[in-house]
Image (cartoon, rainbow, N blue to C red; front, side, top):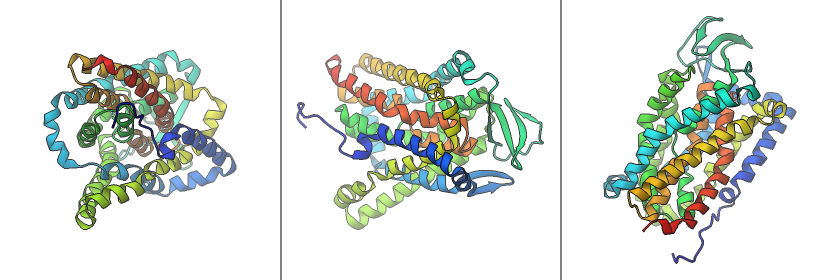
Length: 389
């Protein structure tokens, strides 16, 4: 494509994602006011282990359709060739697995646990699900939580700021594997390399998401057992990953690669975002009262997420320059670390803590700021191409 041509998001869902998210917030709050029992009823349609709702069936369906269109695009044969692009792939893995999870934890605990704690409410609490596989008596303590009985179901009462911290942690350990394809395209990055890095991130998440999540949530005194994280990865990453791989292989064999690319993928383009928006309406139908009573809640969560995104981008962009990467490799390598896989973060927070938890709200705030912040970074990339060979 000629250098003078400007790449644009042609899909109406991608181009106006921030607008759609904002509309879903309004729709969710109105739904919570007008039909307060609807979202609760839907969330009650769950797979239970003992008395604990482990998997919300409606949310699981929505989240599957979020993830499947992403996974089916991945050509895993290209992962083998990634060794030829060792520097950008190595840089991405270093940022995503060695740096980003820990900077997110440090930034979030400073802002939410110290600087903004008084604004959030030093004594404010949140009710979250009992950890999967754990049966403690009422009044028992687990991590920073206390077991209480709410509507006949055992729940954990934890400090509200820690619930927000959990959502930030789940965002910080989930590098983007979806929208980064859009950001790389807009920044005139190396689309082929970006796809390879997406595939590698998807595979490493199967192994490291649970490990990093279990460790950092444990450090934050948040009640999450390992088996719950592993189950969430199995349902929300491994299942769509397997479905994407198998259906891709079958469709290409039956109809050919051209039909798969030009027809099938075209039909799937809006599916991920539609499923995301439906999930957001459910999330905000629960959190409407919290937002209306304290509308600055979103701001307190957004500030550490904004700082984290910019920190990781500039760190990655600077290291790419030191490694003498060309611009087309440097831009996606920096942006894939800066952006978050909010679909998995939302799914995991809902499964581990509940649809109405502060953790789920924090991951939704991640979606809200993702698009405008990443578009800002795309513009920065385009204006600094002369920094690279």
